[in-house]
Figure 1 (tube, rainbow, N blue to C red):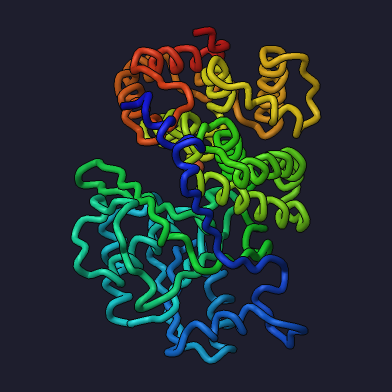
Figure 2 (cartoon, rainbow, N blue to C red):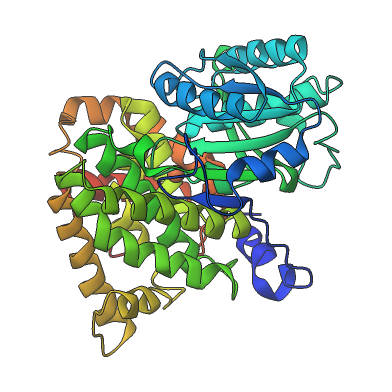
Amino acid sequence: MKALAPLALSTSIKGLTTIFNTPKMFIGANVFPEGPVVGPSTMDTLANRCAKKRAFIVTDEFGNKFAAKAARFLQSGGFTVEIWPRCLPEAPMEVVAECAKAMKAYEPDLIMAVGGGSVMDSAKAAWVLYERPDIIDLGMISPLDKLNLRQKAILVAVPTTAGTGSECTGVSVIHDNAASRKIPITHDELFPDFAILDPQFTISMPPKLTAGTGLDVLAHAMDSVTTPAANEITEPLALKAIEMVFQWLPRAYQNGQDKEARHRMLIAASIAGMAFGNNGGAHLTHSFGHSLGAVFNLHHGMCVGFFLPQTLQFCSPVTDKHLLICRTLGIEAKDAKKGLVKLVARVRSFLTELGVPLTLKELGISRADFNAHFDKLVKFAFEDVDCYLSPRPITAAQCAQVFRYAYDGRDIDF
Ligand SMILES: [Fe+2]
């Protein structure tokens, strides 16, 4: 089955019908204008879609101050606004259900998610429950179902980090903590109607979070290039995102107040979201990263970024698409093998520049801890849904070997 999954996604089969989704996007420092605007504004578009003008803002304690700005903007356009600031990291199922309950009581026709990945994912899932109270188990939603969303409300995503790209994907990942179960929901109808990118909303991210979220962008984009599901639309988007991350992330990391770097990284995150959101592109960086993050409670973006070298190396026997990344980054390579060596060296020096260690040992994981959790690490990675999307099918024994090598930073040679 694992070997068939990437084939089923490949352009030769999937290409019989290629669907490309993207929200309408508003980008820049004046997307939430507080004074007069020249030309069409964000409000002109939103107000047209919402007859009742009842807005429900989903956020968390960090996004609350930005939600207040978004609320002022909506009120200026005649909306009645309720802010629901109780989202939690990892989007726990019970919090999503609570959010949906508040939506049902308020009956909005506009739902706005203001926050990072877990806020946007929580809002998407709660929106499904609000629109479809007959759905009991979100985990049972198939991408082939017809959900008929948007009968009650439209969805607007306003990211406050530049990483997840959830504002431009039809993906929502929530967690059923009671059953220790991750519930990934992927559906065409989950693409937000609008994405509003205000670089001011990302400016207060501390350097470590800036690096972590930025590396998430890079992992989405690099996996989107090497996946067999890449197509003529997603590939150039992913390559552009890679170019932008290398250009702008170090600046945003070194100086959080650098408005241009923040602005470009926010766009890069959305572009990478469009690429992987339309080709199911994230693969091994995410299966290994998810596992490492879950077992040692580490940041998602940092973990997926950490596994970029191993992913490129493991996939290289079945693809030479990393040469496209080399070309994008101006890396000259005579053949696929030499290109891989240079690209991995470039990625490693980039990780170092961003303060990310190159080995699990340097990450502070003791040998005893590593050994104690080894089986769990391998199991989580191997069973992760993204593992099925690897261009090169991977066995549990190979997963184990990748972790062993990652502990000391050895090059993958199998
Ligand atoms: Fe990610």
